[in-house]
Image (cartoon, rainbow, N blue to C red; front, side, top):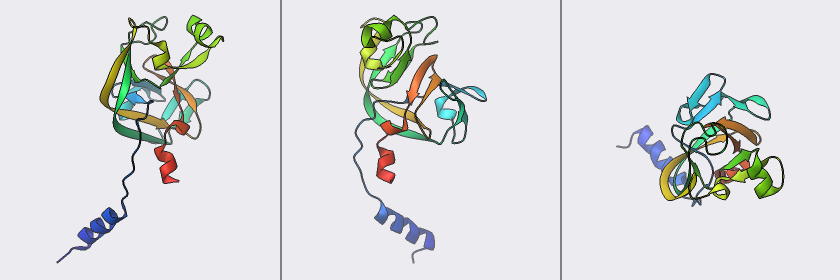
Length: 170
């Protein structure tokens, strides 16, 4: 005899669909510290409705947090290599994670005093290195709109438009 719970599970399984999501080249990996209304917290401890400190809008409520296990090309950034104590510690980011750069690199790469630059565009082979494909869980902070957050001692873009799975739910 089938229990009501087993019947519901079978019904839910029948409604599931498999989708192929390409690697998401943005996000934060575990232990990356994010500035919040409660101080510095590792990204894996964040929850929906946490207050996140942003450069552009002050404290903003986190709409959701998506965790995505994937194999994606990563970049290693040595502590202090992007300016005075930026990042604070060695940091690993997906290749497409955009970083707000406000020094000579922005002028050299984009001809402006500040620019959002992909992590892989900063690779110099010594202080910013290509790590190749890594199996990681990336954490994606979702807000109502794009923001610049403080994470790992850098100013990083958190952009909901870069997460294609949201479009699948629509």
